[in-house]
Image (tube, rainbow, N blue to C red; front, side):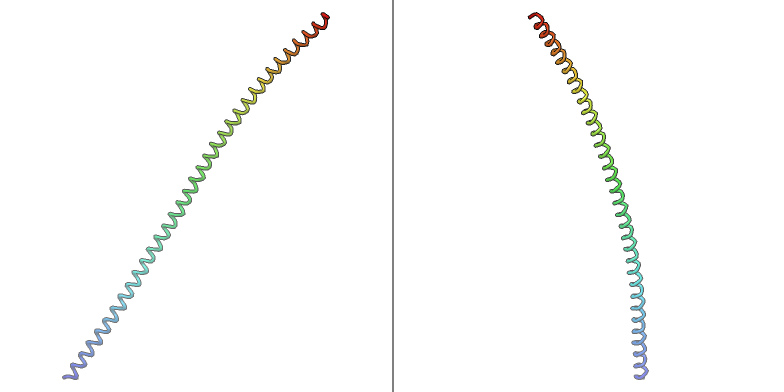
Length: 122
């Protein structure tokens, strides 16, 4: 009977070891699957983050380009206004110089006529 009891104990120990081995294998397999799922989720999240970052950079570049275009338009408008102002002032200065030259010519003419009259009287 002791022999039978020893065989029974050995059988139970072997069955327990086999059960433990199978349980470990199944848990290990399930753990690997969960890790793969987690990695896939992480990879998907990273790709989404990368896409969002690319979109943000593209949006930022578009906004910067728009801002640069607006600044260039403003600068061009100011330059155009300044050019018109300078042209207007130059025209006014030329007109004033012409009027001054006419006044001086008239004075010179009067002076020459007065001088000519003075010479005739002598």
